[in-house]
Length: 354
Ligand code: GLU
Image 1 (tube, rainbow, N blue to C red):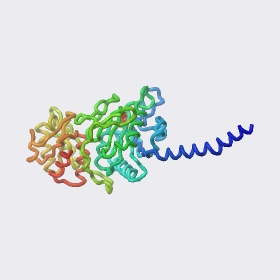
Image 2: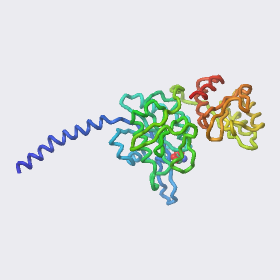
Image 3: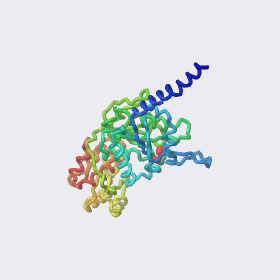
Image 4: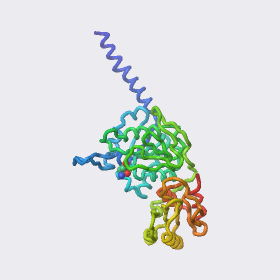
């Protein structure tokens, strides 16, 4: 009996406190990751009307984190909701909020990296934007999911797990904004959503992915494209408006004229082939340029480079060639460029910088 009492005493007052203190200490040694949620399918909730459909961006942060309880073994994660939207509604205002929140989190010495959960529709655009405005070597990782949490083989939990591991890993430092989906790691510069429904929708058509997850660890194959180009938008509460006009057979002047009368500061043409467009549309583009709108020629093709002066004399017309950027990324770079300058040579340098 005495022995039993002594044992209980020892466990209660010696072993348990020591074990507890040790557990606390080893937890506080774990990397700290901040997660910002914005909505999308990764925060999707099945509709209760039996339609099998779901609403994007409904779940709160805790419910999202609860889907991956094992993260507590390798990171201390804290979260904040910055928006609850489908990413088709992503806009400049939310971008500026995200940029500010991410920058402030990364400035904290105790934060190792950040994760941003996002709908997949415009995920690559937010990634590209952050890649150009965040000043830090710490990992910035964006993630989403193609299937809602309630579906069979939901991809959200594994994607989130990988994203937190990536944000916590020293190997991800200095690589700019990364996107991880379906076990593959992409650079913000090249990643594109290329399929409407598949879990392998994200691809990097020009340069290939930069790495993957193997045995729960990120392995990098490539260094992402350059990160030297950075725009300081901290004081801004508005960004210049740039429209994309999509080229096609029988294209008229209509959409370009509409962008000009809507007072766009810039127009990105998603041209055919090497950024080409029909004669009537070209005449409208010349008029747009003459009225002071900054013009970038990109391509609707999906991969490859749009170069200067190939079929169109950009020097004579005062146009900019998008280089390797697709129309949606060219739009963001033009927005950021216009916050700094209207000089065409300078803007062209931004587009050709790697
Ligand atoms: N359209 C929604 C969005 O982009 C849901 C799609 C998704 O997240 O995959 O937020």
